[in-house]
Image (tube, rainbow, N blue to C red):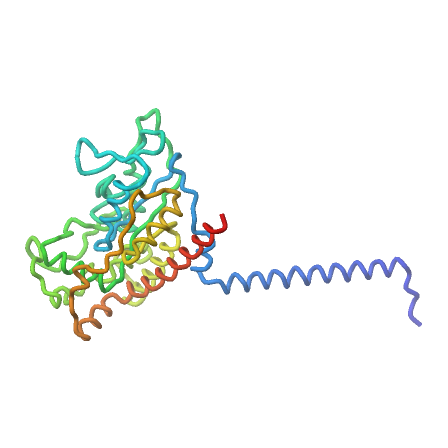
Length: 338
């Protein structure tokens, strides 16, 4: 015969049941939360958290990663000519500008071609800037110096085939970036050169494509990736391994940027920049659909050859457009709710 259940035993049983149910609920909740976050894509997580607190009156610095033939010069001029913030031409060089922080004579909030020159190298890539910028940001006199709290990197991306064709056109007219280099793990590394002589004037598209080491190929991917992850030059890695690492790194670095623009979407890029950094441009941006690249007519074989040489950039650009659209949607939603 079972022993009689006393009130004390009943209370103990109820307590154990409550504890068991509580533990079950916490466990299930944790598992559901884990599954939820695992189901969210990186770009969706980024969409929720991309707007930074840019402290222009403090010590934060914007760093413009200017990739060739993406419209970066146009955007750079907008930054020094058209923002609602004081910028004055450097009296010494007459080429660069001082853009001062509000109520300050500190000109160090923007690190770009038109404010700082090419202090980290001609069209410095992500790796070079990361190793160099903190040593080159201009400072106030000794008694007024402040430590930089945060660097906000941003860039402009362009549809890869059009960008590649634009670079070919630019080089064929005599442009050269022979002075470009990569600063990686403390050492300067010269970029491959596809020609002998001073420049590559009148190069044909076929000749341009035939150079397998042409830095124009997948330029946006390698310039946005952390090349230290591939030992700077891919030493010890297969081509596929190197490509995979660079592409993933470039995607992550874009996600970490509070802002990036798209060449083909000037008006949306302006809106996102203004929303992200709480700054305003005094002029409207114009979408340019007609470029030197758009006038080039290609047969199917040539088009496929260009795509094959820029397959990483094509995948990166597709990722970037999706992320850009999500940020734009979120920004507009936030604006309507405020």
